[in-house]
Length: 127
Image 1 (cartoon, rainbow, N blue to C red):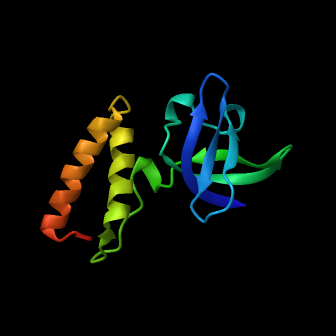
Image 2 (cartoon, rainbow, N blue to C red):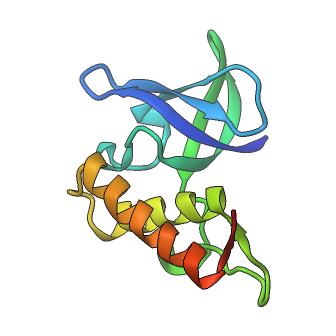
């Protein structure tokens, strides 16, 4: 089963964490040996697509990947379509994390807020 959700916790020293599925339901266990990504890509708050399998103690996420089109770019928005502020925020966050993984959370929030304000001023997003 394919799902998407946000990484809500990850303990690098123990090699596991949990993803909160976007469609609701209980958090899904994720272990570093089952993800197909480097630990440096596992940042709290990042959204992933993943497959769900049944583990020893319940649902388990495997084969994590970014919910993107090819070459690390966000999926295209249909011409004339507008993003919600939430969609815009999520896309900007993912782009910033991909462009510069060393950015702090505070830096990402400051850049993201300014870009969202600018997009709203231009009428590019729905409030």
